[in-house]
Length: 137
Picture 1 (tube, rainbow, N blue to C red):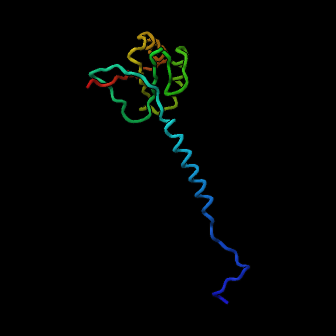
Picture 2: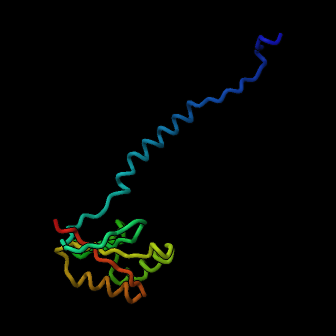
Picture 3: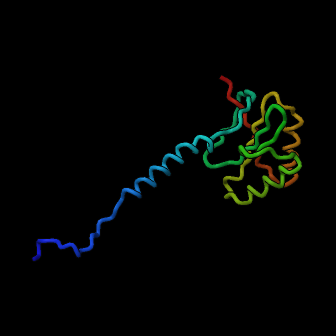
């Protein structure tokens, strides 16, 4: 009896329904959390005729808001005296061509706050520093 299956035969089909369920749940989780990962701090940049393009790659961005609060990326606020050491430790993990620092300061922030950040970075030997401005239209 070659063409007839008996009740003792083992089925070798794979049930893919649970796999599809798990994949859909993961897709929904990523769709919900992705916009929050891209969220950045809102600063009103000063306008300038000559601006530096940030280029390709993931460069380190330091943000100074209107109140003078300093952020690395979109992390929690950081104290000015801690910024040099923290940035140095982050840059040491990056490849040589991605060791640029971009400072985005709100146009209404105190100039002294920008100078404090620059001073802390230079004291740790970080010299590839760029100031970000909005282009004049």
